[in-house]
Amino acid sequence: MTERLYYTDPALIEFDAVVDACDTQDGRIIATLDRTAFYPTSGGQPFDTGILGAASVIDVVDLPDGRIGHVLDRALQAGSSVRGTVNWPRRFDHMQQHTGQHILSAAFDRLFKGRTVGFHLGAAVSTLDLDKVLSAESIGKAEAEANRIVWENREVAIRFASEEEAVSIPLRKEPTRSGRLRLIEVAGFDTSACGGTHVARAGEVGIVAVKSWEKFRGGMRLEFVCGGRALAEYGVVRDAVAGCIRLISVGPRELPAAIERAQGENKDLRRLIRDVQERLAVFEAAAMVDRGRKVGSVTLVLEIAAGVDQAGLKTMAGAAASRGGVVAGLISATEPVLVVLARSPDVPVDASAILKTLLGQAGGKGGGKPELAQGGGMTGRPAEIRAALQTIIERVLQPSP
Image (spheres, rainbow, N blue to C red):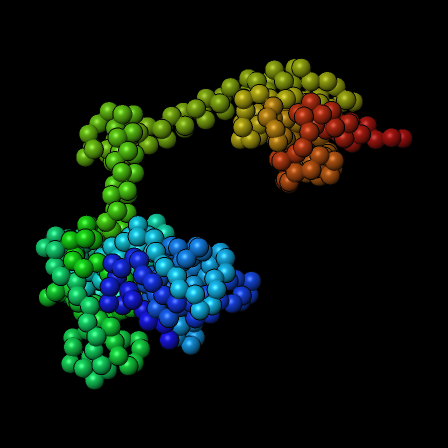
């Protein structure tokens, strides 16, 4: 059994220990010590990293026999004495997030009887799962209550209780393990059984900020950040808002309405552009038909259209085919190549079959109907695709005798 130094002193980052054993398991070097300050992944909180003797600690795990395994980048000598140093910035970040979670969970429980049923401390944000759905207003009240406790800088104490003693203690939730319990107590606000690392006073959490929430398994899942993470998140939001303000020239409070207004104007402009493009397509299609070449009684239109997307190609090809006696194939000027095929109702060819043959030569995907087909992702230059398409269509229009 490894003595867990972080149980009584979460701020301890340097310690001396003896290497009990160092073995290779599943390709990983794992050392066990008589005592350690390194926290193993458990209870939703990730492991510590740091230095152990001459080795780097890259993972820490709870072993089935009650010992703690330190996954190392190199082996240590069994029986040797080593000094361990925990990565303090990572440890303190985890302490801020985990203590903030206790306080936020207690706020939801006290104000709205919203019980925490899940917690995960992630690399960038943490999640909290509640057993009920709450309004945005209620979430805001719980967030404010949590920060009130943080700013009052209440003591966060560690104490231990037997299973019998724990029965008389008003724990926020039933403990998941039996035997002697380690309790984390935020003075006058929350008492919970927990094996994680926590700050000594609530003020060290800095701030608790709920980022987002969504319905999840009959309740809610919230994303939140505390302390240093909250400051970093504020910096991201500040820079994003400042950038938007420079572009739109409004104050922060007017920004949502200004963006909504700009989106509406952009939608109107897109509609106007599409309308103009459709009108121009009719004239462009007429010019393309005039430039087309006769193959028997059919006018074959094959053009590489620059600056036109797939929707524009489809509009122009359709407009050309509406003239009668036309097979139109429009090719994008960009790569990978897009192709749209259209034929007039009086021309008895299958556009989808022609496209299928082309795709067999040039790759890509697509499909359609006898009168209209389209495909994309073709390899080769637009001029090469045009030449291949011309050969296929001419072979269809003038079959060998």
